[in-house]
Length: 582
Ligand code: ATP
Ligand code: MG
Ligand code: MG
Ligand code: MG
Image 1 (cartoon, protein in one colour):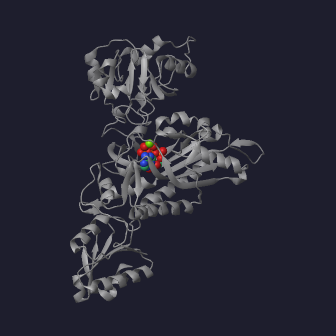
Image 2 (spheres, rainbow, N blue to C red):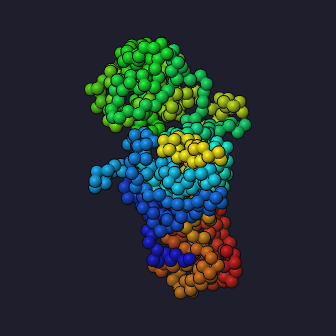
Image 3 (cartoon, rainbow, N blue to C red):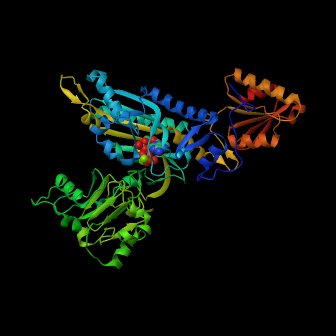
Protein backbone atom coordinates (compact mmCIF):
# COMPACT_ATOMS: atom_id res chain seq x y z
CA UNK A 1 0.00 0.00 0.00
CA UNK A 2 1.15 3.52 -0.81
CA UNK A 3 0.00 6.50 1.22
CA UNK A 4 0.77 9.61 -0.83
CA UNK A 5 1.31 12.67 1.27
CA UNK A 6 0.14 14.94 -1.55
CA UNK A 7 -3.39 13.68 -0.97
CA UNK A 8 -3.24 12.08 2.49
CA UNK A 9 -5.78 13.53 4.95
CA UNK A 10 -3.08 14.86 7.25
CA UNK A 11 -1.98 18.18 8.65
CA UNK A 12 1.05 18.28 10.91
CA UNK A 13 1.41 21.12 13.40
CA UNK A 14 4.57 23.01 14.31
CA UNK A 15 3.14 24.25 17.60
CA UNK A 16 2.28 22.16 20.65
CA UNK A 17 -1.42 22.05 21.48
CA UNK A 18 -2.10 24.23 24.52
CA UNK A 19 -3.85 21.51 26.53
CA UNK A 20 -1.19 18.83 26.15
CA UNK A 21 0.54 17.89 29.41
CA UNK A 22 2.60 14.88 28.34
CA UNK A 23 4.81 14.15 25.31
CA UNK A 24 2.58 11.44 23.84
CA UNK A 25 -0.42 13.75 23.78
CA UNK A 26 1.59 16.63 22.33
CA UNK A 27 3.16 14.52 19.60
CA UNK A 28 0.09 12.50 18.62
CA UNK A 29 -1.80 15.75 18.03
CA UNK A 30 1.10 17.52 16.31
CA UNK A 31 1.79 14.56 14.02
CA UNK A 32 -1.84 14.50 12.93
CA UNK A 33 -2.72 11.14 14.44
CA UNK A 34 -5.58 12.29 16.67
CA UNK A 35 -7.84 15.34 17.07
CA UNK A 36 -9.80 16.24 20.14
CA UNK A 37 -13.58 16.09 19.66
CA UNK A 38 -14.54 16.84 23.29
CA UNK A 39 -12.73 16.49 26.63
CA UNK A 40 -11.38 12.94 26.78
CA UNK A 41 -12.91 12.09 23.40
CA UNK A 42 -10.75 11.84 20.28
CA UNK A 43 -11.05 11.38 16.56
CA UNK A 44 -8.55 9.00 14.95
CA UNK A 45 -7.19 10.39 11.70
CA UNK A 46 -5.88 8.07 8.96
CA UNK A 47 -2.33 7.61 10.26
CA UNK A 48 -3.49 7.35 13.85
CA UNK A 49 -6.09 4.79 12.90
CA UNK A 50 -3.42 2.68 11.22
CA UNK A 51 -1.40 2.66 14.44
CA UNK A 52 -4.47 1.85 16.51
CA UNK A 53 -5.33 -1.04 14.17
CA UNK A 54 -1.78 -2.36 14.36
CA UNK A 55 -1.99 -2.50 18.15
CA UNK A 56 -5.43 -4.08 17.92
CA UNK A 57 -4.12 -6.73 15.55
CA UNK A 58 -1.27 -7.71 17.84
CA UNK A 59 -3.75 -8.09 20.69
CA UNK A 60 -6.18 -10.03 18.46
CA UNK A 61 -3.45 -12.32 17.18
CA UNK A 62 -2.31 -13.27 20.69
CA UNK A 63 -5.88 -13.78 21.90
CA UNK A 64 -6.61 -16.04 18.95
CA UNK A 65 -3.44 -18.01 19.71
CA UNK A 66 -4.82 -19.03 23.11
CA UNK A 67 -8.08 -20.09 21.52
CA UNK A 68 -10.17 -17.13 22.60
CA UNK A 69 -12.95 -16.32 20.13
CA UNK A 70 -13.80 -12.83 18.99
CA UNK A 71 -17.30 -11.38 19.04
CA UNK A 72 -18.70 -7.89 19.55
CA UNK A 73 -21.30 -6.65 21.97
CA UNK A 74 -23.19 -3.42 21.62
CA UNK A 75 -21.85 -0.50 23.61
CA UNK A 76 -25.39 0.70 24.27
CA UNK A 77 -26.76 -1.53 27.01
CA UNK A 78 -29.87 -2.02 29.11
CA UNK A 79 -29.82 -1.20 32.81
CA UNK A 80 -31.22 -4.48 34.15
CA UNK A 81 -28.13 -6.73 34.07
CA UNK A 82 -26.05 -4.02 35.72
CA UNK A 83 -28.81 -3.55 38.27
CA UNK A 84 -28.72 -7.28 39.02
CA UNK A 85 -25.01 -7.22 39.85
CA UNK A 86 -25.19 -3.94 41.76
CA UNK A 87 -22.92 -2.14 39.36
CA UNK A 88 -25.58 0.28 38.11
CA UNK A 89 -25.16 1.91 41.54
CA UNK A 90 -21.56 0.94 42.28
CA UNK A 91 -20.17 2.64 39.21
CA UNK A 92 -21.67 5.95 40.29
CA UNK A 93 -21.11 8.92 38.02
CA UNK A 94 -18.41 7.09 36.06
CA UNK A 95 -21.10 5.53 33.88
CA UNK A 96 -22.68 7.36 30.97
CA UNK A 97 -26.41 6.88 31.46
CA UNK A 98 -29.20 7.69 29.08
CA UNK A 99 -32.86 7.01 28.50
CA UNK A 100 -34.52 5.71 25.39
CA UNK A 101 -37.68 7.33 24.02
CA UNK A 102 -39.86 5.16 26.23
CA UNK A 103 -38.00 6.33 29.30
CA UNK A 104 -36.09 3.09 29.88
CA UNK A 105 -32.66 3.47 31.49
CA UNK A 106 -29.66 2.55 29.42
CA UNK A 107 -25.93 2.89 29.75
CA UNK A 108 -22.84 2.98 27.59
CA UNK A 109 -20.78 -0.02 28.63
CA UNK A 110 -17.78 0.72 30.86
CA UNK A 111 -16.93 -3.01 30.89
CA UNK A 112 -19.03 -6.02 29.88
CA UNK A 113 -18.95 -8.77 32.53
CA UNK A 114 -22.74 -8.80 32.72
CA UNK A 115 -23.35 -9.07 28.99
CA UNK A 116 -20.82 -11.86 28.50
CA UNK A 117 -22.24 -13.79 31.43
CA UNK A 118 -25.74 -13.52 29.99
CA UNK A 119 -24.84 -14.62 26.48
CA UNK A 120 -23.13 -17.73 27.83
CA UNK A 121 -26.16 -18.41 30.01
CA UNK A 122 -28.31 -17.97 26.92
CA UNK A 123 -26.44 -20.50 24.81
CA UNK A 124 -24.60 -22.99 27.01
CA UNK A 125 -25.88 -25.50 29.50
CA UNK A 126 -23.30 -28.22 30.07
CA UNK A 127 -19.81 -28.69 31.48
CA UNK A 128 -19.00 -30.17 28.06
CA UNK A 129 -19.25 -26.65 26.59
CA UNK A 130 -16.47 -25.41 28.88
CA UNK A 131 -13.84 -24.06 29.11
CA UNK A 132 -14.69 -21.07 26.97
CA UNK A 133 -12.85 -17.80 26.41
CA UNK A 134 -14.49 -15.06 24.37
CA UNK A 135 -13.40 -11.51 23.73
CA UNK A 136 -14.14 -8.27 21.95
CA UNK A 137 -12.17 -5.23 20.87
CA UNK A 138 -14.61 -2.41 21.29
CA UNK A 139 -15.22 1.12 22.49
CA UNK A 140 -15.76 1.53 26.19
CA UNK A 141 -17.28 4.55 27.88
CA UNK A 142 -16.33 5.91 31.28
CA UNK A 143 -17.10 9.40 32.42
CA UNK A 144 -13.71 9.75 34.08
CA UNK A 145 -13.51 12.46 36.73
CA UNK A 146 -10.25 13.60 35.22
CA UNK A 147 -9.72 12.62 31.61
CA UNK A 148 -6.07 13.30 30.97
CA UNK A 149 -3.13 13.19 28.65
CA UNK A 150 -5.03 12.73 25.41
CA UNK A 151 -5.94 9.11 24.84
CA UNK A 152 -4.03 7.89 27.88
CA UNK A 153 -7.17 8.41 29.99
CA UNK A 154 -10.11 9.02 27.72
CA UNK A 155 -13.86 8.92 28.22
CA UNK A 156 -14.32 6.83 25.07
CA UNK A 157 -11.55 4.34 24.43
CA UNK A 158 -10.90 1.00 22.80
CA UNK A 159 -10.44 -1.92 25.15
CA UNK A 160 -9.88 -5.58 24.46
CA UNK A 161 -11.90 -7.38 27.09
CA UNK A 162 -12.06 -11.12 27.38
CA UNK A 163 -13.89 -13.40 29.75
CA UNK A 164 -13.25 -17.01 30.65
CA UNK A 165 -15.84 -19.54 31.76
CA UNK A 166 -14.89 -22.68 33.64
CA UNK A 167 -16.55 -25.40 35.59
CA UNK A 168 -14.28 -25.09 38.64
CA UNK A 169 -11.43 -23.22 40.29
CA UNK A 170 -8.72 -25.32 38.62
CA UNK A 171 -10.23 -24.50 35.26
CA UNK A 172 -10.22 -20.80 36.10
CA UNK A 173 -6.59 -21.04 37.17
CA UNK A 174 -5.68 -22.58 33.81
CA UNK A 175 -7.64 -19.96 31.84
CA UNK A 176 -6.02 -17.21 33.89
CA UNK A 177 -2.55 -18.61 33.21
CA UNK A 178 -3.30 -18.75 29.47
CA UNK A 179 -4.34 -15.12 29.48
CA UNK A 180 -1.32 -14.15 31.53
CA UNK A 181 0.95 -15.76 28.93
CA UNK A 182 -0.95 -14.06 26.10
CA UNK A 183 -0.55 -10.71 27.86
CA UNK A 184 3.19 -11.26 28.23
CA UNK A 185 3.36 -11.95 24.49
CA UNK A 186 1.26 -8.86 23.72
CA UNK A 187 3.27 -6.45 25.85
CA UNK A 188 6.56 -7.92 24.59
CA UNK A 189 5.44 -7.38 21.01
CA UNK A 190 4.27 -3.86 21.78
CA UNK A 191 7.82 -3.18 22.95
CA UNK A 192 6.97 -2.17 26.51
CA UNK A 193 9.29 -2.04 29.44
CA UNK A 194 6.70 -3.36 31.90
CA UNK A 195 6.14 -5.05 35.23
CA UNK A 196 3.44 -7.45 36.35
CA UNK A 197 2.18 -6.40 39.76
CA UNK A 198 -0.30 -7.64 42.31
CA UNK A 199 -3.39 -5.48 42.08
CA UNK A 200 -6.63 -4.59 43.77
CA UNK A 201 -9.68 -5.88 41.98
CA UNK A 202 -11.60 -2.60 42.25
CA UNK A 203 -15.07 -2.35 40.72
CA UNK A 204 -14.66 -5.71 39.01
CA UNK A 205 -14.94 -7.68 42.22
CA UNK A 206 -13.36 -11.08 42.62
CA UNK A 207 -10.15 -12.23 44.17
CA UNK A 208 -6.75 -12.64 42.53
CA UNK A 209 -5.75 -9.98 40.08
CA UNK A 210 -2.62 -8.63 38.44
CA UNK A 211 -1.85 -5.53 36.44
CA UNK A 212 0.59 -5.02 33.60
CA UNK A 213 2.17 -1.61 34.14
CA UNK A 214 4.33 0.08 31.52
CA UNK A 215 7.14 1.73 33.44
CA UNK A 216 6.78 5.48 32.84
CA UNK A 217 7.48 8.65 34.79
CA UNK A 218 4.14 10.05 33.70
CA UNK A 219 2.26 7.01 34.95
CA UNK A 220 -0.59 7.47 37.41
CA UNK A 221 0.09 4.23 39.25
CA UNK A 222 2.82 3.72 41.81
CA UNK A 223 4.22 0.28 42.34
CA UNK A 224 6.88 -1.21 44.56
CA UNK A 225 9.18 -4.08 43.82
CA UNK A 226 11.96 -5.95 45.53
CA UNK A 227 15.13 -7.51 44.14
CA UNK A 228 13.62 -10.91 45.00
CA UNK A 229 10.74 -10.52 42.56
CA UNK A 230 7.94 -9.13 44.72
CA UNK A 231 5.98 -6.51 42.76
CA UNK A 232 2.72 -4.84 43.70
CA UNK A 233 0.70 -1.77 42.99
CA UNK A 234 0.92 0.26 46.18
CA UNK A 235 -2.88 0.00 46.25
CA UNK A 236 -2.48 -3.69 46.91
CA UNK A 237 0.38 -3.77 49.37
CA UNK A 238 -0.82 -5.30 52.57
CA UNK A 239 0.83 -4.01 55.68
CA UNK A 240 -0.14 -6.25 58.59
CA UNK A 241 -0.54 -3.63 61.30
CA UNK A 242 -3.19 -1.84 59.30
CA UNK A 243 -5.94 -4.32 59.96
CA UNK A 244 -7.72 -3.01 63.02
CA UNK A 245 -10.70 -4.86 64.40
CA UNK A 246 -13.35 -3.18 66.48
CA UNK A 247 -14.06 -4.37 70.02
CA UNK A 248 -17.29 -5.79 68.63
CA UNK A 249 -15.36 -7.84 66.07
CA UNK A 250 -16.02 -5.57 63.12
CA UNK A 251 -13.46 -5.67 60.34
CA UNK A 252 -11.59 -2.57 59.39
CA UNK A 253 -13.14 -1.18 56.29
CA UNK A 254 -16.25 -1.55 54.26
CA UNK A 255 -17.67 0.14 51.24
CA UNK A 256 -21.33 0.91 51.52
CA UNK A 257 -23.50 1.79 48.59
CA UNK A 258 -25.88 4.51 49.46
CA UNK A 259 -28.63 5.77 47.20
CA UNK A 260 -28.02 9.48 47.20
CA UNK A 261 -26.43 11.86 49.58
CA UNK A 262 -25.32 9.79 52.55
CA UNK A 263 -26.11 10.92 56.07
CA UNK A 264 -25.14 9.70 59.51
CA UNK A 265 -28.30 7.62 59.50
CA UNK A 266 -27.24 5.94 56.29
CA UNK A 267 -24.04 4.97 57.99
CA UNK A 268 -25.76 3.72 61.14
CA UNK A 269 -28.17 1.65 59.04
CA UNK A 270 -25.30 0.17 57.08
CA UNK A 271 -23.46 -0.75 60.26
CA UNK A 272 -26.50 -2.44 61.73
CA UNK A 273 -27.25 -4.31 58.51
CA UNK A 274 -23.72 -5.44 57.77
CA UNK A 275 -21.95 -5.48 61.11
CA UNK A 276 -24.30 -6.18 63.97
CA UNK A 277 -22.54 -5.63 67.25
CA UNK A 278 -21.56 -8.74 69.14
CA UNK A 279 -22.91 -7.33 72.42
CA UNK A 280 -26.43 -7.42 71.04
CA UNK A 281 -27.26 -3.74 71.07
CA UNK A 282 -27.64 -1.67 67.94
CA UNK A 283 -25.20 0.83 66.57
CA UNK A 284 -26.37 4.38 67.18
CA UNK A 285 -25.33 7.74 65.86
CA UNK A 286 -23.36 8.24 69.06
CA UNK A 287 -21.16 5.25 68.22
CA UNK A 288 -20.27 6.72 64.89
CA UNK A 289 -18.84 9.70 66.72
CA UNK A 290 -16.43 7.46 68.53
CA UNK A 291 -15.68 4.46 66.39
CA UNK A 292 -15.98 5.38 62.80
CA UNK A 293 -13.67 7.19 60.51
CA UNK A 294 -15.57 8.04 57.37
CA UNK A 295 -14.23 8.55 53.93
CA UNK A 296 -16.42 9.91 51.17
CA UNK A 297 -15.30 8.06 48.11
CA UNK A 298 -14.42 10.01 45.03
CA UNK A 299 -16.95 9.33 42.29
CA UNK A 300 -14.21 8.02 40.01
CA UNK A 301 -14.06 5.11 42.39
CA UNK A 302 -10.42 5.34 43.14
CA UNK A 303 -7.93 8.11 43.83
CA UNK A 304 -8.38 10.82 46.44
CA UNK A 305 -11.39 10.70 48.71
CA UNK A 306 -13.61 13.72 48.65
CA UNK A 307 -13.28 14.03 52.37
CA UNK A 308 -12.28 11.99 55.35
CA UNK A 309 -13.03 12.50 58.98
CA UNK A 310 -15.03 11.50 62.00
CA UNK A 311 -18.59 12.70 61.96
CA UNK A 312 -19.40 14.38 65.18
CA UNK A 313 -18.19 16.40 68.03
CA UNK A 314 -15.10 15.24 69.76
CA UNK A 315 -12.17 17.48 70.42
CA UNK A 316 -8.69 16.10 70.56
CA UNK A 317 -5.28 17.55 70.96
CA UNK A 318 -4.76 19.59 67.85
CA UNK A 319 -1.01 19.65 67.91
CA UNK A 320 -0.75 15.91 67.91
CA UNK A 321 -3.35 15.74 65.23
CA UNK A 322 -1.25 17.96 63.01
CA UNK A 323 1.87 15.92 63.57
CA UNK A 324 0.10 12.67 62.83
CA UNK A 325 -1.32 13.63 59.51
CA UNK A 326 1.72 15.27 58.09
CA UNK A 327 2.25 15.72 55.21
CA UNK A 328 -1.48 15.81 54.54
CA UNK A 329 -3.05 19.07 55.59
CA UNK A 330 -5.61 19.49 58.35
CA UNK A 331 -8.14 22.21 57.80
CA UNK A 332 -10.84 23.49 60.02
CA UNK A 333 -13.90 24.46 58.13
CA UNK A 334 -17.54 25.14 58.49
CA UNK A 335 -20.15 25.10 55.85
CA UNK A 336 -19.59 28.77 55.36
CA UNK A 337 -16.02 28.03 54.36
CA UNK A 338 -17.01 26.23 51.21
CA UNK A 339 -16.04 29.29 49.23
CA UNK A 340 -12.54 29.03 50.64
CA UNK A 341 -12.36 25.28 50.19
CA UNK A 342 -14.34 24.51 47.04
CA UNK A 343 -12.95 20.98 47.03
CA UNK A 344 -14.90 20.28 50.22
CA UNK A 345 -18.15 21.40 48.68
CA UNK A 346 -18.10 18.23 46.66
CA UNK A 347 -18.11 16.03 49.68
CA UNK A 348 -17.88 16.78 53.36
CA UNK A 349 -18.32 15.32 56.74
CA UNK A 350 -19.80 17.89 59.02
CA UNK A 351 -21.30 17.73 62.46
CA UNK A 352 -24.06 15.21 62.01
CA UNK A 353 -23.89 15.30 58.25
CA UNK A 354 -22.17 13.36 55.56
CA UNK A 355 -22.68 15.55 52.60
CA UNK A 356 -21.94 15.24 48.97
CA UNK A 357 -23.08 16.54 45.65
CA UNK A 358 -22.73 13.31 43.81
CA UNK A 359 -21.29 10.68 46.06
CA UNK A 360 -23.10 7.43 45.95
CA UNK A 361 -20.81 5.56 48.26
CA UNK A 362 -19.35 6.04 51.63
CA UNK A 363 -16.53 4.06 53.03
CA UNK A 364 -16.08 3.66 56.73
CA UNK A 365 -13.40 2.41 58.99
CA UNK A 366 -14.03 1.02 62.40
CA UNK A 367 -11.24 1.13 64.84
CA UNK A 368 -11.24 1.39 68.58
CA UNK A 369 -8.04 3.37 68.22
CA UNK A 370 -10.01 6.10 66.51
CA UNK A 371 -11.87 6.52 69.75
CA UNK A 372 -8.62 6.64 71.65
CA UNK A 373 -7.30 9.19 69.22
CA UNK A 374 -4.12 7.24 68.77
CA UNK A 375 -1.84 5.57 66.26
CA UNK A 376 -2.82 5.65 62.64
CA UNK A 377 -5.88 7.80 62.97
CA UNK A 378 -5.56 10.23 60.12
CA UNK A 379 -6.82 13.01 62.29
CA UNK A 380 -9.79 15.13 61.61
CA UNK A 381 -11.66 13.60 64.50
CA UNK A 382 -12.89 16.92 65.64
CA UNK A 383 -16.02 18.66 64.51
CA UNK A 384 -15.43 20.35 61.24
CA UNK A 385 -11.87 19.18 60.92
CA UNK A 386 -10.90 17.42 57.75
CA UNK A 387 -7.82 16.04 56.19
CA UNK A 388 -7.00 17.45 52.80
CA UNK A 389 -4.36 16.46 50.30
CA UNK A 390 -4.53 12.82 51.16
CA UNK A 391 -2.57 10.97 48.59
CA UNK A 392 -4.09 7.76 47.38
CA UNK A 393 -1.58 4.99 47.80
CA UNK A 394 0.51 6.98 50.19
CA UNK A 395 -2.01 7.68 52.91
CA UNK A 396 -4.68 5.06 52.35
CA UNK A 397 -5.85 2.43 49.90
CA UNK A 398 -9.08 1.67 48.13
CA UNK A 399 -10.47 -0.66 50.76
CA UNK A 400 -10.14 2.19 53.19
CA UNK A 401 -7.11 0.82 54.96
CA UNK A 402 -4.71 3.55 55.77
CA UNK A 403 -1.54 1.73 55.15
CA UNK A 404 0.42 2.81 52.15
CA UNK A 405 1.94 5.63 54.10
CA UNK A 406 3.77 2.78 55.75
CA UNK A 407 5.28 1.59 52.50
CA UNK A 408 8.50 3.46 51.93
CA UNK A 409 11.45 2.87 49.66
CA UNK A 410 13.81 0.59 51.49
CA UNK A 411 11.10 -1.21 53.48
CA UNK A 412 11.29 -4.98 53.46
CA UNK A 413 8.87 -6.61 51.01
CA UNK A 414 5.92 -8.39 52.69
CA UNK A 415 7.25 -11.74 51.42
CA UNK A 416 10.73 -11.04 52.77
CA UNK A 417 12.31 -10.82 49.32
CA UNK A 418 14.36 -7.71 49.95
CA UNK A 419 13.99 -3.94 50.17
CA UNK A 420 11.21 -2.28 48.21
CA UNK A 421 11.83 0.42 45.62
CA UNK A 422 8.99 2.41 44.15
CA UNK A 423 8.44 3.64 40.60
CA UNK A 424 5.57 4.82 38.44
CA UNK A 425 3.73 3.05 35.69
CA UNK A 426 0.82 3.19 33.28
CA UNK A 427 -1.80 0.45 33.68
CA UNK A 428 -1.89 -1.29 30.30
CA UNK A 429 -3.66 -4.48 31.19
CA UNK A 430 -5.49 -6.04 34.09
CA UNK A 431 -6.37 -9.69 34.64
CA UNK A 432 -8.86 -10.89 37.26
CA UNK A 433 -10.00 -14.16 38.69
CA UNK A 434 -13.61 -13.12 39.17
CA UNK A 435 -14.83 -16.39 40.58
CA UNK A 436 -18.59 -16.74 40.84
CA UNK A 437 -19.64 -13.18 41.55
CA UNK A 438 -21.25 -12.49 38.16
CA UNK A 439 -22.38 -16.03 37.49
CA UNK A 440 -24.18 -16.05 40.83
CA UNK A 441 -25.78 -12.65 40.38
CA UNK A 442 -27.03 -13.55 36.90
CA UNK A 443 -27.63 -17.22 37.60
CA UNK A 444 -25.23 -18.75 35.10
CA UNK A 445 -25.26 -22.48 35.85
CA UNK A 446 -24.41 -25.57 33.81
CA UNK A 447 -24.82 -29.28 34.42
CA UNK A 448 -21.68 -31.02 35.69
CA UNK A 449 -20.59 -34.64 35.05
CA UNK A 450 -23.06 -35.89 37.65
CA UNK A 451 -25.98 -34.02 36.17
CA UNK A 452 -25.92 -31.49 38.98
CA UNK A 453 -26.34 -27.75 38.32
CA UNK A 454 -23.20 -25.80 39.25
CA UNK A 455 -22.41 -22.13 39.06
CA UNK A 456 -19.81 -21.28 36.43
CA UNK A 457 -16.58 -19.62 37.53
CA UNK A 458 -15.23 -16.70 35.54
CA UNK A 459 -12.21 -14.55 34.79
CA UNK A 460 -12.04 -11.17 33.10
CA UNK A 461 -9.08 -9.70 31.28
CA UNK A 462 -8.62 -6.20 29.81
CA UNK A 463 -6.09 -4.46 27.60
CA UNK A 464 -6.27 -0.71 27.00
CA UNK A 465 -5.77 -0.55 23.24
CA UNK A 466 -5.96 3.22 22.77
CA UNK A 467 -4.02 3.71 25.97
CA UNK A 468 -1.33 1.43 24.53
CA UNK A 469 -0.92 3.75 21.54
CA UNK A 470 -0.29 6.69 23.88
CA UNK A 471 1.94 4.66 26.19
CA UNK A 472 4.05 3.43 23.27
CA UNK A 473 4.40 7.05 22.13
CA UNK A 474 5.30 8.01 25.69
CA UNK A 475 8.19 5.56 25.65
CA UNK A 476 9.26 6.06 22.02
CA UNK A 477 9.98 9.64 21.07
CA UNK A 478 12.67 12.31 21.09
CA UNK A 479 12.54 16.08 20.91
CA UNK A 480 11.86 15.91 17.16
CA UNK A 481 8.92 13.57 17.22
CA UNK A 482 7.65 10.02 17.48
CA UNK A 483 9.68 6.86 16.87
CA UNK A 484 7.36 3.89 16.34
CA UNK A 485 8.45 0.28 16.64
CA UNK A 486 8.08 -1.18 13.14
CA UNK A 487 5.17 -3.48 13.92
CA UNK A 488 3.14 -0.54 15.18
CA UNK A 489 4.20 2.23 12.77
CA UNK A 490 1.60 3.55 10.33
CA UNK A 491 3.93 2.55 7.46
CA UNK A 492 7.01 0.39 7.01
CA UNK A 493 8.97 3.02 5.08
CA UNK A 494 8.73 6.77 4.89
CA UNK A 495 9.94 7.58 1.40
CA UNK A 496 10.81 11.19 0.65
CA UNK A 497 11.40 12.66 -2.81
CA UNK A 498 13.11 16.07 -2.81
CA UNK A 499 14.23 18.64 -5.35
CA UNK A 500 12.67 20.50 -8.22
CA UNK A 501 13.48 17.97 -10.96
CA UNK A 502 11.23 15.16 -12.06
CA UNK A 503 13.99 12.54 -11.70
CA UNK A 504 13.85 11.96 -7.92
CA UNK A 505 10.05 11.80 -8.03
CA UNK A 506 10.14 9.28 -10.84
CA UNK A 507 12.77 7.17 -9.07
CA UNK A 508 10.86 7.37 -5.78
CA UNK A 509 7.56 6.43 -7.41
CA UNK A 510 9.23 3.34 -8.82
CA UNK A 511 10.72 2.40 -5.45
CA UNK A 512 7.32 2.91 -3.80
CA UNK A 513 5.62 0.64 -6.34
CA UNK A 514 8.23 -2.08 -5.88
CA UNK A 515 8.02 -1.92 -2.11
CA UNK A 516 4.25 -2.13 -2.36
CA UNK A 517 4.59 -5.17 -4.59
CA UNK A 518 6.78 -6.76 -1.90
CA UNK A 519 3.98 -6.28 0.63
CA UNK A 520 5.23 -3.16 2.39
CA UNK A 521 3.27 -0.05 3.29
CA UNK A 522 4.98 3.10 2.06
CA UNK A 523 4.29 6.58 3.29
CA UNK A 524 5.45 8.47 0.21
CA UNK A 525 6.15 12.18 0.49
CA UNK A 526 5.47 13.12 -3.12
CA UNK A 527 4.50 16.73 -2.37
CA UNK A 528 5.86 19.01 -5.06
CA UNK A 529 5.77 22.47 -3.58
CA UNK A 530 7.08 21.58 -0.15
CA UNK A 531 10.72 22.18 0.79
CA UNK A 532 13.07 19.33 1.69
CA UNK A 533 13.44 20.88 5.15
CA UNK A 534 9.71 20.66 5.83
CA UNK A 535 9.58 17.09 4.53
CA UNK A 536 12.41 16.00 6.82
CA UNK A 537 10.78 17.68 9.81
CA UNK A 538 7.51 15.90 9.04
CA UNK A 539 9.28 12.58 8.66
CA UNK A 540 10.91 13.03 12.07
CA UNK A 541 7.64 14.06 13.65
CA UNK A 542 5.60 11.20 12.15
CA UNK A 543 8.08 8.62 13.39
CA UNK A 544 8.10 5.88 10.75
CA UNK A 545 11.24 3.96 11.78
CA UNK A 546 12.97 3.96 8.36
CA UNK A 547 13.22 7.05 6.18
CA UNK A 548 14.52 6.80 2.60
CA UNK A 549 15.40 10.02 0.79
CA UNK A 550 15.59 10.20 -2.99
CA UNK A 551 17.18 13.57 -3.70
CA UNK A 552 20.63 15.01 -4.23
CA UNK A 553 22.29 11.58 -4.00
CA UNK A 554 20.51 10.45 -7.10
CA UNK A 555 23.16 12.05 -9.36
CA UNK A 556 25.62 9.60 -7.72
CA UNK A 557 23.08 6.80 -8.06
CA UNK A 558 22.31 6.49 -4.34
CA UNK A 559 19.36 6.79 -1.98
CA UNK A 560 19.95 7.89 1.62
CA UNK A 561 18.42 5.53 4.16
CA UNK A 562 18.03 6.85 7.73
CA UNK A 563 17.19 4.99 10.87
CA UNK A 564 14.84 7.27 12.78
CA UNK A 565 15.82 5.94 16.20
CA UNK A 566 19.61 5.86 15.95
CA UNK A 567 19.79 8.62 13.35
CA UNK A 568 22.38 6.59 11.42
CA UNK A 569 22.43 7.13 7.66
CA UNK A 570 23.71 4.98 4.82
CA UNK A 571 23.84 5.62 1.10
CA UNK A 572 22.41 2.66 -0.76
CA UNK A 573 22.81 2.23 -4.54
CA UNK A 574 19.51 2.83 -6.30
CA UNK A 575 19.40 -0.67 -7.73
CA UNK A 576 19.72 -2.24 -4.27
CA UNK A 577 17.48 0.04 -2.27
CA UNK A 578 14.31 -2.07 -2.43
CA UNK A 579 16.12 -5.20 -1.23
CA UNK A 580 17.77 -3.13 1.46
CA UNK A 581 14.44 -1.81 2.74
CA UNK A 582 12.39 -5.00 2.66
P1 ATP B 1 -7.34 3.03 35.65
O1 ATP B 1 -6.85 2.53 36.98
O2 ATP B 1 -6.24 3.60 34.81
O3 ATP B 1 -8.52 3.94 35.77
P2 ATP B 1 -8.96 0.76 35.44
O4 ATP B 1 -8.34 -0.08 36.48
O5 ATP B 1 -10.18 1.53 35.77
O6 ATP B 1 -7.85 1.76 34.84
P3 ATP B 1 -9.84 -1.60 34.04
O7 ATP B 1 -11.25 -1.56 34.44
O8 ATP B 1 -8.91 -2.55 34.72
O9 ATP B 1 -9.24 -0.10 34.12
O10 ATP B 1 -9.82 -1.77 32.44
C1 ATP B 1 -8.86 -2.52 31.70
C2 ATP B 1 -7.89 -1.63 30.94
O11 ATP B 1 -8.54 -0.58 30.20
C3 ATP B 1 -6.94 -0.87 31.85
O12 ATP B 1 -5.89 -1.71 32.26
C4 ATP B 1 -6.48 0.27 30.95
O13 ATP B 1 -5.41 -0.15 30.13
C5 ATP B 1 -7.69 0.55 30.09
N1 ATP B 1 -8.41 1.76 30.53
C6 ATP B 1 -9.16 1.90 31.64
N2 ATP B 1 -9.68 3.14 31.71
C7 ATP B 1 -9.23 3.80 30.61
C8 ATP B 1 -9.44 5.11 30.11
N3 ATP B 1 -10.21 5.97 30.75
N4 ATP B 1 -8.84 5.45 28.93
C9 ATP B 1 -8.07 4.57 28.27
N5 ATP B 1 -7.85 3.32 28.70
C10 ATP B 1 -8.42 2.92 29.85
MG1 MG C 1 -10.48 3.53 36.20
MG1 MG D 1 -6.69 0.64 37.79
MG1 MG E 1 -7.69 -2.01 36.34
